[in-house]
Image (tube, rainbow, N blue to C red; front, side, top):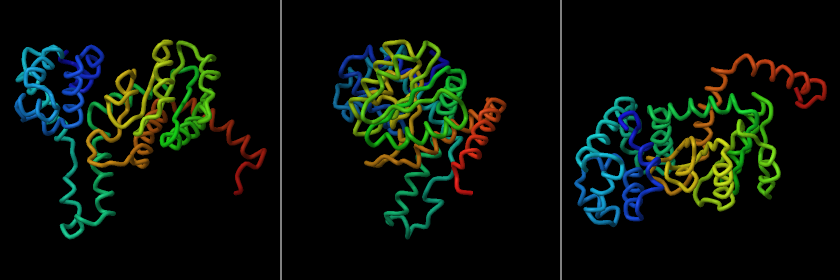
Length: 284
């Protein structure tokens, strides 16, 4: 257990928690900074459960007690804060703090700086390895998530073969039946979470296909069942979903693939360039 970061530990144990303990899990994941120094009673009030439920939650994760769990959270936050850039107040003059555009930029910075914390970097490299080694990759994102899914599918197709994008009108199962146990499914899911994508994620999981999810939080409906979860807005205090932070996260994945699979990418792109040139795909 010592090697597993707190969020990963919560995700691993989540399916086995009681309804009350799941409330505690959701609160802690979304408010880790606050919860690091609150009492079990205070956390219980925020999560709308009893103090006893919070203590039982710590036991369910394998800790000897609530204080030991809190120590783990504090150590994780200490490590994370050592990687942080200066806070937003140092970057923007005080007179701009109430400007709506400044608030958007501040929120973006807040999101982006957390993309490079140690936990996210580990998961990004795991995703990179899967996406390089997979014989086929099937990508899905409906409604608000489709734009990011399309961008990723298009970009990944320029780096390797056998990348498919599911149509928003629904052709997942027809494409899924061609996958193997060496394939991967990548799903995009942001609030409001589309039921179709949850079912797609469940199908991949039930059939033993590696499931990578790109979502806003670890315990979203698809995040909690994923093999690899890449999250973008875990720490954001915003009611909207930022497409720029999603693309930034995907850019990190693409950069990792370039780093590890440069030779194959070069061969693939040379083939593409010949086709582009022969059929005058671009007006240059």
